[in-house]
Amino acid sequence: MAAISKKEADAWDRVLDAAADLADLIETSEIEIDEYDLEELTIFLATHGYAVRNMLKHLNRTWPPD
Image (cartoon, rainbow, N blue to C red):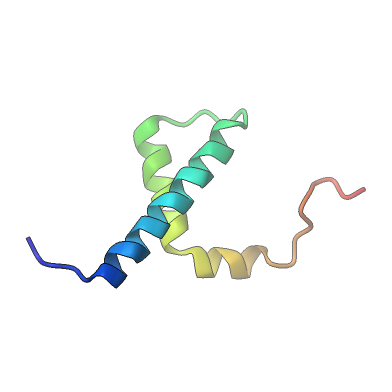
């Protein structure tokens, strides 16, 4: 097993925390997705958070707008 630095470990912990928050959000919807796919999706989105933020930055927080 390759050794990782504390900085890398902390960064991965932040990815996992974000993925857990995304999973909680998705689970509150009516979207049906199995546990494995949900985990894969949320880790992917969290890992690519910068790109996701750039795609969503111009959206309103709620839909439909008031």
